[in-house]
Length: 141
Length: 141
DNA sequence: GTTTATAATATAGATGTCTATATAAATTCA
DNA sequence: TGAATTTATATAGACATCTATATTATAAAC
Image 1 (cartoon, rainbow over the protein chains, first blue to last red):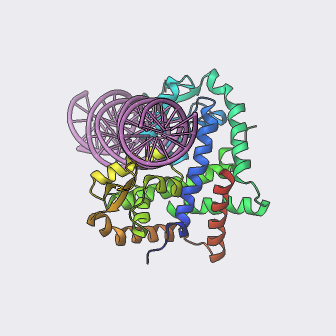
Image 2: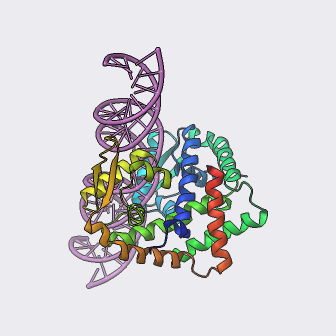
Image 3: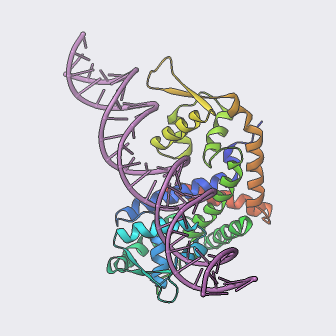
């Protein structure tokens, strides 16, 4: 008798993420973004001139992933990359006007997503879910 | 002042899923599987002869996704597909010996993943996390 | 100072995922 | 019965993601 898939918390994590990702794609698509790109933008809205290494360490993705995503976002006119004058290996990322202009609508979408995600949750449940998800990351680190 | 990404539960969900997915890929890769394929197998271990439509409704993925994944798994010798004798549009999926033989090692990997995911969680926290993740899915449905 | 090692980024090839569309079989309906 | 609709699956093209490897620039070591 194998345990049913549904009984695994890991499966529920996958399914919850899938649901969130689908909604994010749907909403962000209206702005011409793909899910994941808005995270890059959020980091740049907080601080420009980031290097690939910074994205990699902050997001936990592999370097080639960021390399490709940044290239596509540059091609889409969302950001630009300039070689560092001190260290020729380093390329720093800056927002274009188009990338800057997306801050308001993207944040609105994320706040709406967050609201939907947490619908019917008590305050205690909200902070608990955040804490447990952070613990999960620690557990896998 | 934009809210930091980290403050969103949605972001923590994405990051927790990424951590889980990476570990799953790493472990399942040893068996020649990709993350996601083992879910297909689990469903088949519970019941053979499933149709694409069943996978789609159970997993919440789109039909073309399942179509492609099943083709790759068939090519990998994990399963076979046979046209339904009653309805020529329907193709039913069956396990090969190779697919059957993976039940033990895959379940062991998932049990290990589950253990790691829930490391340091109390019983109450475990069931709460499961419940909250299920509620998230409902909220996005 | 030239060679070797390290570090930052890019490329290649694969997979799961999506949307849009095509194909083929069954069903409905006039 | 024959055309139109619905249903099940496949294909095309795109993107985020991975591992493995290449390229390029800096740093270290002899």
